Image 1 (cartoon, each protein chain N blue to C red):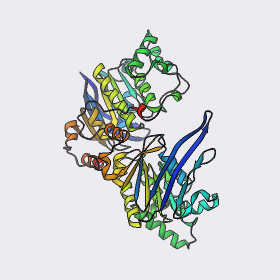
Image 2 (cartoon, chains in turn green, purple):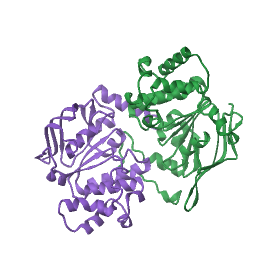
Image 3 (tube, each protein chain N blue to C red):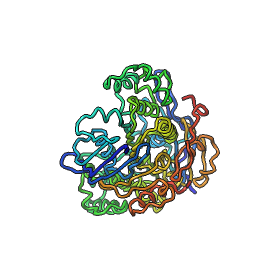
Image 4 (tube, chains in turn brown, cyan):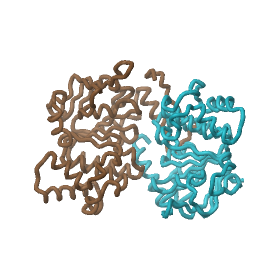
Length: 277
Length: 249
């Protein structure tokens, strides 16, 4: 399996009045054309990891790494201008909430077209055809009609599918999905993830799925990194999650109620064990 | 006596009717869940009972007393609500102490200092949090304060609107344990709105599945645990949850 992305000793820090605080404390991983899940609770640094890969962390935030390589390109050395040809075209990112990440004053079709023409020059007729077929690929009925709608006229689940369409239309090699379904209803969640899964597998892309939901990640990924306060505490194959060894992972698994719950009390994490928070 | 009685309840926001023809009886001491997708009207029912959605027709009675359409202090004494987002439901410029004392002042109850102290203890918060502001607390601590605020008047009925969906899994477990303990200690009745079926399984005795503003099915939690929901839509909802849990379930 060829390596798509290589990250070594990635660190992200922010200045505070008590000195710099590291939110990602030296994590390393390699990603091939596979589905990698990053799980952790709020403040574990999982989203910062995703953003650091795309160099989306602005000053005063500071990103350092011994290696940050995407298909042989050293991302650390890329200028802002060079990064723009990587973002979207080769690595793209789906954000959590479609309500805030779609442009409210552009129609759905215009936004998707923008994602495409920024990286490629194409005749107008072909752009239109690509948009329609992409909307079909994310299972939107009546794509012609939907392309003319504004974001406020579509539901949350549909908005998220439109985002996915927009992110996948330049055919990137790596998709970073940061909590792509946490703003959606349970019944729509599965649909959206199935679509991502299907497209990623069909096109042989790499996927980094960032989520706080262990079950969801174990269902849609091949490999899982569990993060806690900026470090990777456990790495395992998705199927092996039930046999996780680290007390933090085990604690998270146990703290979740199940559909057939018989415990009178849920076990609670003893936070003092891992971090001083 | 029933804790909550809803008869032919229709609720509207302006010209849009969002809940229609709901009949529901919740016994005293029961823990009841309303589940369904966003927009199914489950939170609206809670808001109508709490007096936040005054545009309704039909009957709402709490502990045998019919609720009026306006501000109803008698109902407020018996029935309080906890909201979803602990970041938005506490006044940012009021200390925890004044947030907790306010309902006592409104209802003219004395002994405020001691009541606040006792309540902080009951929800598992250290006394040092008493004079802090909400922004100095974590999400889980804030939700504890929100629950404490709702319990200050010693109500019998608690309306819970997605009390844990904004929280991390491990914090959710703490809050669920707290809610379960408080119900046992104080003999509370819960009406819980959630889309998380495992939470229902942990905390509730019965549930109603809602869709498009109406109740599709009322079921026992045992039916939920063993996957024996009757209506097609309820089964769909259950399948979606089980799908998400399949890998470890």
